[in-house]
Length: 289
Image (cartoon, rainbow, N blue to C red):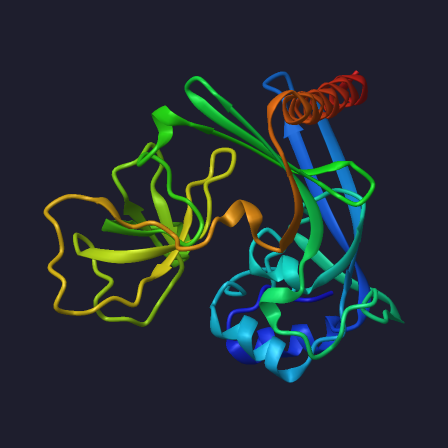
Protein backbone atom coordinates (compact mmCIF):
# COMPACT_ATOMS: atom_id res chain seq x y z
CA UNK A 1 0.00 0.00 0.00
CA UNK A 2 1.48 3.34 -1.04
CA UNK A 3 0.85 6.51 1.00
CA UNK A 4 -0.30 9.98 0.02
CA UNK A 5 3.02 11.66 -0.62
CA UNK A 6 3.59 14.64 1.67
CA UNK A 7 7.30 15.25 0.97
CA UNK A 8 9.55 15.07 -2.07
CA UNK A 9 11.33 12.10 -0.52
CA UNK A 10 8.04 10.17 -0.25
CA UNK A 11 7.07 11.10 -3.82
CA UNK A 12 10.50 10.00 -5.09
CA UNK A 13 10.19 6.67 -3.25
CA UNK A 14 6.70 6.06 -4.70
CA UNK A 15 7.84 6.75 -8.27
CA UNK A 16 10.82 4.44 -7.79
CA UNK A 17 8.47 1.59 -6.80
CA UNK A 18 6.01 2.32 -9.63
CA UNK A 19 8.59 2.74 -12.41
CA UNK A 20 8.27 0.00 -15.04
CA UNK A 21 5.63 -1.85 -13.04
CA UNK A 22 1.89 -2.44 -12.92
CA UNK A 23 -0.15 -1.62 -9.84
CA UNK A 24 -3.80 -1.72 -8.81
CA UNK A 25 -5.79 1.40 -7.97
CA UNK A 26 -8.91 0.89 -5.85
CA UNK A 27 -11.71 3.46 -5.75
CA UNK A 28 -14.54 2.95 -3.27
CA UNK A 29 -17.79 4.82 -2.72
CA UNK A 30 -20.54 4.29 -0.15
CA UNK A 31 -23.91 6.04 0.05
CA UNK A 32 -26.33 5.99 2.95
CA UNK A 33 -29.97 7.05 2.55
CA UNK A 34 -31.94 8.84 5.30
CA UNK A 35 -33.88 5.62 5.97
CA UNK A 36 -30.65 3.75 6.73
CA UNK A 37 -30.30 1.88 3.44
CA UNK A 38 -26.75 1.74 2.13
CA UNK A 39 -25.10 1.09 -1.22
CA UNK A 40 -21.44 0.71 -1.99
CA UNK A 41 -19.20 0.07 -4.95
CA UNK A 42 -15.53 -0.77 -5.43
CA UNK A 43 -13.80 -0.20 -8.77
CA UNK A 44 -10.37 -1.66 -9.47
CA UNK A 45 -8.09 -0.41 -12.24
CA UNK A 46 -4.65 -1.57 -13.30
CA UNK A 47 -2.15 1.12 -14.23
CA UNK A 48 1.22 0.45 -15.85
CA UNK A 49 4.05 2.99 -15.62
CA UNK A 50 6.78 3.17 -18.21
CA UNK A 51 10.31 2.69 -16.88
CA UNK A 52 11.23 6.18 -15.68
CA UNK A 53 14.63 7.76 -16.11
CA UNK A 54 16.09 9.92 -13.33
CA UNK A 55 15.44 13.05 -15.41
CA UNK A 56 11.76 12.17 -15.95
CA UNK A 57 11.16 11.40 -12.27
CA UNK A 58 12.84 14.61 -11.11
CA UNK A 59 10.97 16.67 -13.73
CA UNK A 60 7.66 15.36 -12.41
CA UNK A 61 8.59 15.87 -8.76
CA UNK A 62 9.68 19.46 -9.44
CA UNK A 63 6.17 20.54 -10.55
CA UNK A 64 4.60 19.71 -7.15
CA UNK A 65 1.58 17.89 -8.59
CA UNK A 66 2.35 14.84 -6.41
CA UNK A 67 1.56 16.66 -3.14
CA UNK A 68 -1.11 14.81 -1.17
CA UNK A 69 -1.72 12.29 -3.99
CA UNK A 70 -2.01 8.56 -3.34
CA UNK A 71 1.07 6.89 -4.79
CA UNK A 72 2.71 10.27 -5.36
CA UNK A 73 1.12 11.00 -8.75
CA UNK A 74 -2.03 12.42 -10.36
CA UNK A 75 -3.00 10.63 -13.55
CA UNK A 76 -5.43 13.44 -14.46
CA UNK A 77 -2.49 15.83 -14.82
CA UNK A 78 1.10 15.62 -16.02
CA UNK A 79 1.55 12.06 -14.74
CA UNK A 80 -0.56 10.85 -17.67
CA UNK A 81 2.62 11.19 -19.77
CA UNK A 82 4.27 8.55 -17.57
CA UNK A 83 1.54 5.93 -18.07
CA UNK A 84 1.78 3.41 -20.90
CA UNK A 85 -1.33 1.30 -20.20
CA UNK A 86 -4.57 1.45 -18.19
CA UNK A 87 -7.10 -1.34 -17.70
CA UNK A 88 -10.39 -0.43 -16.01
CA UNK A 89 -11.83 2.94 -15.07
CA UNK A 90 -10.17 6.21 -16.15
CA UNK A 91 -9.16 8.20 -14.24
CA UNK A 92 -8.52 5.80 -11.34
CA UNK A 93 -8.11 7.46 -7.95
CA UNK A 94 -8.08 7.29 -4.17
CA UNK A 95 -6.17 4.18 -3.08
CA UNK A 96 -2.96 2.95 -4.67
CA UNK A 97 -1.72 -0.60 -4.04
CA UNK A 98 1.41 -2.17 -5.51
CA UNK A 99 0.80 -5.73 -6.68
CA UNK A 100 2.46 -8.29 -8.93
CA UNK A 101 5.67 -6.32 -9.36
CA UNK A 102 5.68 -7.05 -13.08
CA UNK A 103 8.24 -5.33 -15.24
CA UNK A 104 6.77 -3.43 -18.18
CA UNK A 105 8.95 -2.60 -21.13
CA UNK A 106 7.38 0.82 -21.65
CA UNK A 107 5.14 -0.17 -24.56
CA UNK A 108 7.82 0.72 -27.08
CA UNK A 109 8.57 4.14 -25.58
CA UNK A 110 12.22 5.04 -25.20
CA UNK A 111 13.46 5.55 -21.64
CA UNK A 112 15.34 8.63 -22.83
CA UNK A 113 12.57 10.58 -24.52
CA UNK A 114 11.81 14.04 -23.05
CA UNK A 115 8.85 14.04 -20.67
CA UNK A 116 6.69 16.17 -22.98
CA UNK A 117 6.99 13.57 -25.78
CA UNK A 118 5.72 10.62 -23.72
CA UNK A 119 2.10 10.86 -24.77
CA UNK A 120 -0.80 8.69 -25.90
CA UNK A 121 -1.60 9.00 -29.60
CA UNK A 122 -5.15 10.28 -29.96
CA UNK A 123 -7.73 11.63 -32.40
CA UNK A 124 -9.18 14.99 -31.37
CA UNK A 125 -12.85 15.66 -32.20
CA UNK A 126 -14.12 19.24 -31.93
CA UNK A 127 -17.69 20.48 -32.22
CA UNK A 128 -18.19 24.26 -32.04
CA UNK A 129 -21.83 24.83 -31.16
CA UNK A 130 -23.78 27.91 -30.12
CA UNK A 131 -22.91 28.65 -26.51
CA UNK A 132 -20.45 25.81 -26.03
CA UNK A 133 -17.42 23.97 -27.36
CA UNK A 134 -17.43 20.16 -27.12
CA UNK A 135 -14.33 17.98 -27.43
CA UNK A 136 -13.41 14.33 -27.04
CA UNK A 137 -10.23 12.30 -27.49
CA UNK A 138 -10.29 8.85 -29.09
CA UNK A 139 -7.67 6.17 -28.46
CA UNK A 140 -6.07 3.91 -31.08
CA UNK A 141 -9.18 1.69 -31.07
CA UNK A 142 -11.53 4.63 -31.63
CA UNK A 143 -12.85 4.63 -28.06
CA UNK A 144 -13.33 7.94 -26.22
CA UNK A 145 -11.15 8.32 -23.13
CA UNK A 146 -11.59 12.04 -22.43
CA UNK A 147 -14.59 14.35 -22.82
CA UNK A 148 -14.99 18.08 -22.16
CA UNK A 149 -17.82 20.54 -22.67
CA UNK A 150 -16.74 24.17 -22.31
CA UNK A 151 -19.65 26.59 -22.04
CA UNK A 152 -19.21 30.25 -22.86
CA UNK A 153 -21.08 31.19 -19.69
CA UNK A 154 -18.33 29.52 -17.60
CA UNK A 155 -15.42 31.42 -19.12
CA UNK A 156 -13.59 33.24 -16.37
CA UNK A 157 -15.85 31.52 -13.82
CA UNK A 158 -14.04 28.21 -13.57
CA UNK A 159 -10.60 27.44 -12.11
CA UNK A 160 -8.79 25.31 -14.66
CA UNK A 161 -5.67 23.20 -14.19
CA UNK A 162 -2.51 25.35 -13.92
CA UNK A 163 -4.46 28.63 -13.94
CA UNK A 164 -3.19 31.25 -11.49
CA UNK A 165 -5.86 32.97 -9.38
CA UNK A 166 -5.85 35.64 -6.72
CA UNK A 167 -7.73 34.31 -3.71
CA UNK A 168 -8.50 35.41 -0.17
CA UNK A 169 -7.57 32.95 2.57
CA UNK A 170 -10.62 32.13 4.69
CA UNK A 171 -10.97 29.80 7.70
CA UNK A 172 -8.83 26.77 8.48
CA UNK A 173 -10.20 23.39 7.49
CA UNK A 174 -11.34 21.02 10.27
CA UNK A 175 -8.44 19.09 11.79
CA UNK A 176 -5.96 21.71 10.56
CA UNK A 177 -5.88 20.01 7.13
CA UNK A 178 -5.32 23.25 5.27
CA UNK A 179 -7.17 26.45 4.45
CA UNK A 180 -10.28 27.38 2.52
CA UNK A 181 -9.61 29.99 -0.18
CA UNK A 182 -12.20 32.29 -1.76
CA UNK A 183 -11.51 32.60 -5.50
CA UNK A 184 -14.75 34.43 -6.19
CA UNK A 185 -16.26 31.22 -7.58
CA UNK A 186 -19.12 28.95 -6.53
CA UNK A 187 -16.89 26.73 -4.35
CA UNK A 188 -13.98 27.59 -2.12
CA UNK A 189 -10.59 26.30 -3.18
CA UNK A 190 -8.44 24.31 -0.77
CA UNK A 191 -4.76 24.82 -0.06
CA UNK A 192 -3.04 22.11 1.94
CA UNK A 193 -1.12 22.81 5.18
CA UNK A 194 1.99 24.91 4.56
CA UNK A 195 4.69 26.46 6.70
CA UNK A 196 4.66 29.63 4.60
CA UNK A 197 4.10 32.53 6.99
CA UNK A 198 2.16 34.49 4.38
CA UNK A 199 -0.78 32.07 4.50
CA UNK A 200 -2.91 33.71 7.17
CA UNK A 201 -6.63 34.31 7.45
CA UNK A 202 -7.70 37.26 5.32
CA UNK A 203 -4.54 37.38 3.16
CA UNK A 204 -4.94 37.95 -0.59
CA UNK A 205 -2.47 35.60 -2.31
CA UNK A 206 -1.78 34.11 -5.74
CA UNK A 207 -2.56 30.39 -6.09
CA UNK A 208 -1.96 27.84 -8.84
CA UNK A 209 -4.71 25.30 -9.55
CA UNK A 210 -3.33 21.80 -8.90
CA UNK A 211 -6.58 20.00 -9.72
CA UNK A 212 -9.96 21.23 -10.89
CA UNK A 213 -13.20 21.17 -8.90
CA UNK A 214 -14.97 17.82 -8.99
CA UNK A 215 -18.40 16.86 -7.67
CA UNK A 216 -18.86 18.83 -4.42
CA UNK A 217 -15.13 19.50 -3.93
CA UNK A 218 -13.53 22.80 -4.83
CA UNK A 219 -10.23 23.10 -6.71
CA UNK A 220 -6.99 22.06 -4.98
CA UNK A 221 -4.47 24.90 -4.84
CA UNK A 222 -0.82 25.61 -4.14
CA UNK A 223 1.00 28.91 -3.73
CA UNK A 224 1.93 30.42 -7.11
CA UNK A 225 5.42 31.70 -7.85
CA UNK A 226 4.90 35.24 -9.11
CA UNK A 227 6.95 38.42 -8.86
CA UNK A 228 6.64 40.22 -5.51
CA UNK A 229 6.38 43.50 -7.42
CA UNK A 230 2.89 42.55 -8.68
CA UNK A 231 0.30 44.21 -6.50
CA UNK A 232 -2.55 42.07 -5.18
CA UNK A 233 -6.06 43.10 -6.34
CA UNK A 234 -8.83 44.12 -3.96
CA UNK A 235 -10.98 41.08 -4.72
CA UNK A 236 -10.45 37.47 -5.90
CA UNK A 237 -10.00 37.10 -9.67
CA UNK A 238 -8.21 35.20 -12.42
CA UNK A 239 -4.62 36.38 -12.79
CA UNK A 240 -3.30 34.22 -15.63
CA UNK A 241 -4.67 31.34 -17.66
CA UNK A 242 -2.65 28.16 -18.04
CA UNK A 243 -0.22 28.27 -20.96
CA UNK A 244 -1.09 24.67 -21.89
CA UNK A 245 -4.54 23.19 -22.51
CA UNK A 246 -5.10 20.68 -19.68
CA UNK A 247 -7.51 18.70 -21.87
CA UNK A 248 -4.62 17.71 -24.16
CA UNK A 249 -2.13 16.81 -21.41
CA UNK A 250 -0.58 13.41 -22.00
CA UNK A 251 -2.03 13.16 -25.51
CA UNK A 252 -0.33 13.42 -28.89
CA UNK A 253 -2.97 14.49 -31.41
CA UNK A 254 -2.39 12.64 -34.68
CA UNK A 255 -5.67 13.69 -36.32
CA UNK A 256 -8.29 16.40 -35.78
CA UNK A 257 -11.91 15.93 -36.83
CA UNK A 258 -14.58 18.61 -37.10
CA UNK A 259 -18.07 18.92 -38.52
CA UNK A 260 -20.52 16.03 -38.63
CA UNK A 261 -17.97 13.20 -38.06
CA UNK A 262 -16.75 14.91 -34.88
CA UNK A 263 -20.29 15.65 -33.71
CA UNK A 264 -21.23 11.98 -34.04
CA UNK A 265 -18.19 10.84 -32.01
CA UNK A 266 -18.89 13.40 -29.28
CA UNK A 267 -22.58 12.47 -29.11
CA UNK A 268 -21.54 8.82 -28.76
CA UNK A 269 -19.07 9.69 -25.99
CA UNK A 270 -21.77 11.59 -24.08
CA UNK A 271 -24.24 8.73 -24.52
CA UNK A 272 -21.61 6.28 -23.25
CA UNK A 273 -21.07 8.36 -20.13
CA UNK A 274 -24.82 8.61 -19.53
CA UNK A 275 -25.22 4.82 -19.89
CA UNK A 276 -22.50 4.26 -17.32
CA UNK A 277 -24.21 6.68 -14.93
CA UNK A 278 -27.55 4.89 -15.36
CA UNK A 279 -25.93 1.50 -14.74
CA UNK A 280 -24.31 2.81 -11.59
CA UNK A 281 -27.61 4.22 -10.28
CA UNK A 282 -29.43 0.96 -11.09
CA UNK A 283 -26.72 -1.06 -9.32
CA UNK A 284 -26.88 1.20 -6.26
CA UNK A 285 -30.68 0.83 -6.08
CA UNK A 286 -30.57 -2.98 -6.49
CA UNK A 287 -27.99 -3.34 -3.72
CA UNK A 288 -29.97 -1.13 -1.36
CA UNK A 289 -33.03 -3.41 -1.55
